Image (cartoon, rainbow, N blue to C red; front, side, top):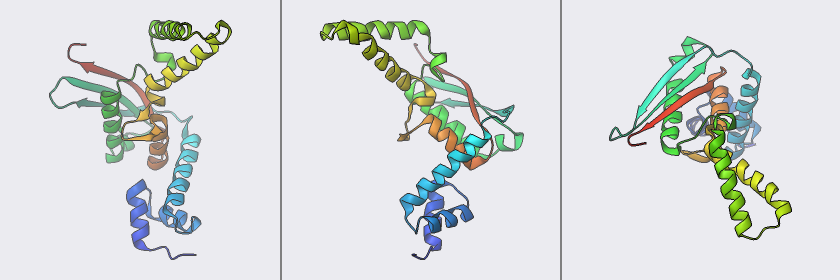
Length: 198
């Protein structure tokens, strides 16, 4: 087994934000393989997040982000379990990242339930017209359209959007990792995005 050096622990800590002992442990479990160690830490964080999912989130912050030029702004409410966590730098950094993502990606809602049904119906009609135009058989059009609607939801719902800072992850992945790192249940409760002229 390779020796786990302080430099390796420092590198893993910088990459994941995990504690020193956790980093040492997973590096030993991964035989010094940095990629494997990161994966193990992510799995650990996701397991912690799942355990905390049912806990009440009655504290938190409302974070405001105004983009350069003051023509675009976001308000987002993010809740946690304790006032102590709400005041930490990690929690504020998470809120800022989410607000900046909302500014950039312009989600239509948190989840599919929040998307205006009229918008979804309009998309459904467009998809159906495209399929008819392409000459697809009538009996498979509905199935194709539903698949396209699911894809549409993934693109417009905040929780399933690809994170702008790391497209390998969804916002839900980032939230679960943050729950694992901070050690409390966290919820993105609601948001509003303002843009001049919209």
